[in-house]
Image 1 (cartoon, one colour):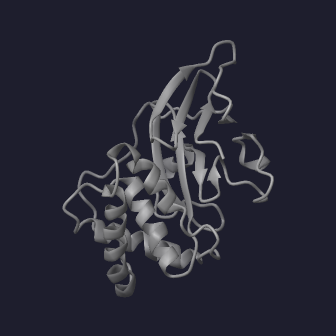
Image 2 (image 1 turned 180 degrees about the vertical axis):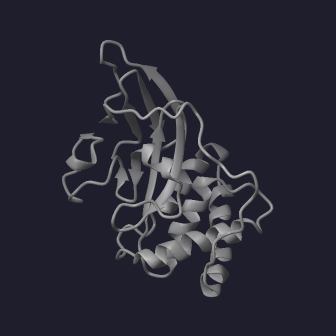
Length: 217
């Protein structure tokens, strides 16, 4: 399985190394660029410019309602995520969290209501933690929470451009981001519980190169 994923946009390529957590840019000259032989290449011909701006609220909104049972279990899930992130070399933290987010790979898909409750519960619990919990930590804890209930979350990690940025989130079985803003649709999926690259139609025989067009998955 490749450790690096390169998303080739019309003018730039973004390479993410899932072994080290490092990301870097490479220019695309005459539509071509070179990558190491073990890199999974995803070609993405469409970009939706955001100019680095999105609408955000001026005040911190209260967290959406989540059932008490989910909130109680969310606290241990966040503590476990924090422990995994801290247990080992700092340079490998990203890799450890990505692996943890994929822990429920073989479990049955959770219903949309359970996924929503898990995401909301994690965001509620994250406000009690004495540290900043970004999208990677929150989505990982959500995936872990669902795995603890015997279900699978469709965890996603992806890249968007203009400017280049990374994001992690959870989708429902229909492929819709759960409790996410509309601009999440701008991200190209680079890692799922199935491994590097967009989710394949069939788990076996994952191709080395894939289109980023959802219709081709």
